[in-house]
Image (tube, rainbow, N blue to C red; front, top):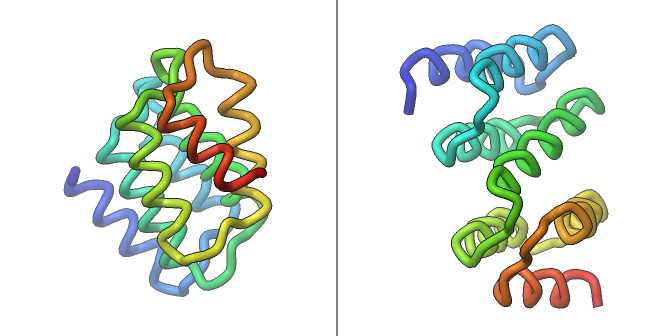
Length: 125
């Protein structure tokens, strides 16, 4: 992982929550090049899991950024779907916001792999 992100993450997580100005700090470091790679997405998932209080601004940023990562090429392929399955089921519960993410991915992607459709069906039907 980029060392700079790790330092930022540890600093932000010192109090167990991510506040507005910290969301902007994350946004600046994660989206400056317009691309969210897997390593950055994993970092963001780790931050989300470690957060004791999820502020609305961070939740919105988190899901927007994960969606951008997953449909960067216009499709949700098998690899992306398997990764998302692991993220969604990591806590054993499919949250409403995760269901919304799946619906958005389904609607916005040009191609939705069989694995992505299976995840969609499992979580929403």
